[in-house]
Length: 78
Image 1 (cartoon, rainbow, N blue to C red):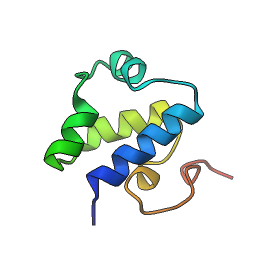
Image 2 (spheres, rainbow, N blue to C red):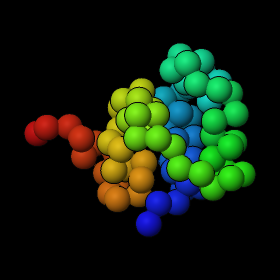
Image 3 (cartoon, rainbow, N blue to C red):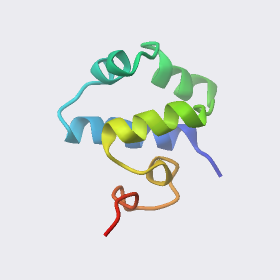
């Protein structure tokens, strides 16, 4: 089951790991500054398009952000 709080936490962890801020990411992707806060407050799900763009930005898989895998690199071909 989708957990918006867990997805938000994973995004924040990856941003920190990559030396980026939430504001930087949201600005570069053209999203509202309150996007992640809204996820947390409303427990709302991101659209597939937004989630995909965030995953690409963070170089991880959408499945990782959704908690379907523990491997952030599961999207990469070996």
